[in-house]
Length: 517
Image (cartoon, rainbow, N blue to C red):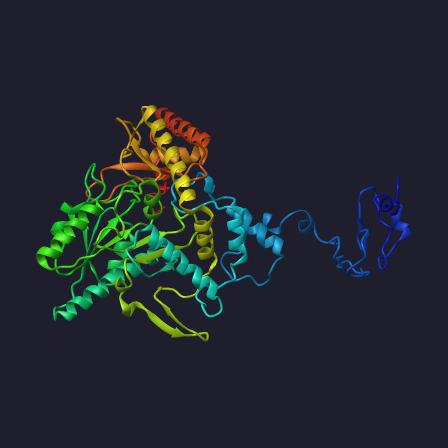
């Protein structure tokens, strides 16, 4: 059998490089293909570090060391629990730390089968590169990173144009729509207080009117900032609100009315046009200027491209502010949101802070300070990469596949689809047709257990809490083949339930409920 030296020479090497130690007595016993023997390195490259007669030496070229079996062939956490309670006394190699996380995350659901979340789960490789290369930029340091700040304002101006703002305006990036909603609602409250104080009227009992179809963050705002929530209940087969629902709840203490564009429950929109007309009439007849804030967390990146003639934005006089989530149908990874005002004067001046922190006076009105610039840059990438043409193509593709899924579910004879004939997000809201010994929560559990699809089941808000539905979001990564496969898997889950009956209570408890999931 050839010696390792001859093997290396045959492969183009020149024997042992200078500085590598050679032991003729051991060479003859080396099996073909072994390139390391304890303290010896046989790599054919000039050494970057001279090996020592020490079991712990390491050649930085071939990275061969005399280590334990776990180091060479596995991961010590294959047989040891992961650190979870106490702060670790010792560190570990970068590879071990990565493997530790990978093993944990492998037990999570597959994002490609997560039809519950509105949040983006895929971006182009070029966008991912932009994100990775700019994770170290702290967006709030405007003096050090002025281009990042300028790109934020480019995005704000582009969104104002998309939402048909009548002239110069203002806005900002936020961590998501929750922060944007908090800021927008605070501006409503402070502008109302200014008007009341200017008229020498009491300003201690503000209220905010919204429907039961809003995200829970609106109730959170009212609790955190001492505003009375006036919640319009829903009803069976009535999943949004209109002017007739709002009218009984508004008065001189109303800081604003919230209209939802693309509800998390069924994907529809409130009657923004009707609510705008109501508030214009109230302004004329009762001298009360009550603004609308449009919660477009999901829909404000959908309606301009799927329903461009539908009026919900700054084309309506009483719409003064709009929030939207860039990390939903803006097609950016979390977390990024946007708040845009109709005019600069619609932002309460007292919300703006001026600070000279790092050598330059900056104005900010976000709730947080330090945050990465990556997602702002990724949003701008999408804007210039896709434009109106690209966003329209993506939204229409998702809508077409959503309609196909709705048709498939109807044709199965097992489900009825909710509101697919209306303006809607690219999703399918559906519920079981007829009587069954199981319900939608059982179907969601069985579907997850059998095929790994995450499709939420939940009850609607009051007064429609007796209605339970399922909802499948159709993302740009969900192909037509997957749509057909999903339909088959849903029907197969129902067949299983036909045979075995409803799932056990403990199984049902594991099903994620709620539209924010």
